[in-house]
Length: 114
Length: 114
Image (cartoon, rainbow over all chains, first blue to last red; front, side):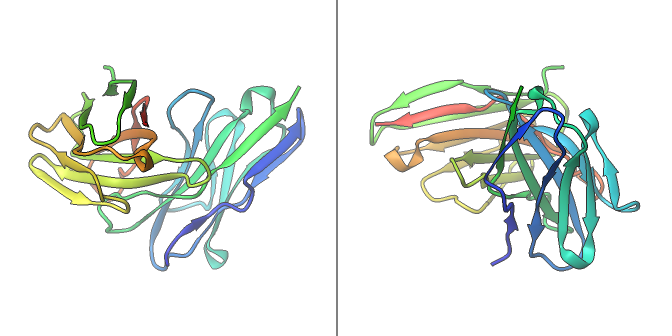
């Protein structure tokens, strides 16, 4: 079945550590890719998105993601995390022409220790 | 500009009761979506709408119905609630068009069915 996989369910880091969260999808063809963040008790907010062009995408709050088409991956990175980055992170994919239906990964909970 | 709002924020139902969740958006978006969020499963699409008067099934539509009588509103109904429908429900909206699939999310409704 077509899906989106996030390999890390819970990641614990100390402040200033580097972060990389994995995301793989199984759709062929053209896709649009997103990372959303959900801070505790809040709704989802868009971190960054990839539609076309430069596969290295920069988002808000110092996050970036790299689209590697050959690996069907869209990993999220941040060089130095802060306590305020504690949240749940969701990767999501829209297959082109699918009427905007987002398919989400299972989510990765990030805990940053001060 | 309130974005996407949801009513109510919390609700407790007994098995077999019915209820309607209201989603409203003031961004003139064509597309609207209902998701449920369960631990370890990410967000799953229940139903969606690509315009006023049109609805379609998503990934997990059973036990839910929807209506989109006005462009700005998208209602999610539970005719006979079951404990398996205990979840957090999120509404989202987006513009139409192949390059504008960013979805804007509401704050969520936490539903408990006892």
